[in-house]
Structure formats: structure tokens, C-alpha cells
Length: 160
Image (cartoon, rainbow, N blue to C red; front, top):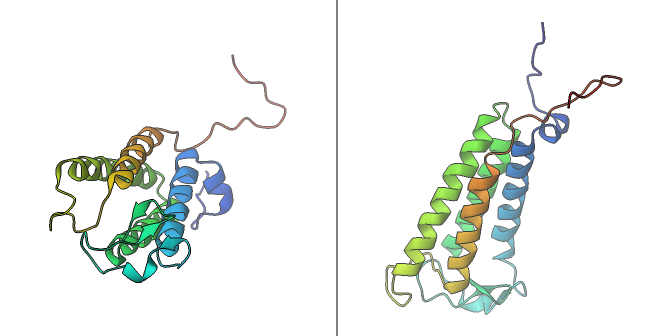
């Protein structure tokens, strides 16, 4: 009888493509959230506001950010890391699917709002919109990766 290990290890994540991808997304989101608070990586850092379209700070000189925007990236990143390390692999699939759906919703929201209105509270610019589209599509697509990789015992033959 195989008893699962109580705590996941790097071996568990390495043998689960969907968990590995979730971990990578989590790390990237966490790094992006931190980068949004680093002068130099964020241009016009002095114009970083808490919320709203008035924030003129740009991450990498391209993506409009605010304290709220950075905090959301930090939280989403921490959630991705926690989910990837959880001992229930379907959680990674759900993180990617729900996160992807949220990003596609945010993409549509960004396309239809007036960027100079109070509705742009995150804030978003056109670069953010299209990045959200790419994130949404890739997250949903990658959520269909296998929960576990197929391993073949040493010396065993693969069936073709």
C-alpha cells in the first residue's frame, strides 16, 4: 500500500507539470509585485499612488502600476506558490483556470472602460490589457497539463 508523503517536496512538484507551472506563475507574480515597489524598475516612482488612474508609475517603463496593483500581484503570487506546494494537485489546475478567467475578465474590463475615469481604479493601460489577455489564455491552456508525469520504472519498456 502506497501512503502519500504528508508534505510535498520539490520531487512532488517536479513530477507534476501543472504544479510546476503554477509555482512558476506564483514566483513571477511575486517578483512583479516586488518590482513595482522598486525605483528604477518602476519609472516615475514618485508618482506611484495607492489606487486610481492618476498613478503615473510604470513598471519597466511600460505597465501602469499603483500600490493596489502591486499588492494584488503580491497576493496572487503568494497564492500561486501556496497552491503549488499544497498536497492536492487539482488545486493548481483550479488556480490556473480561475486565475486565467479573472485575467480574461480584466482584459475585457480594461478594453471597455475609459482609462481616464474612476472605473480605472487598478490602474490599467493598453500594455496591461494585452498582457492580461496573454496571461489569461496561457494560464487556462496550461491548466490542462497533467497532474502527474508518467514515470517509467528503470529497466521497464515503454509501450508504444
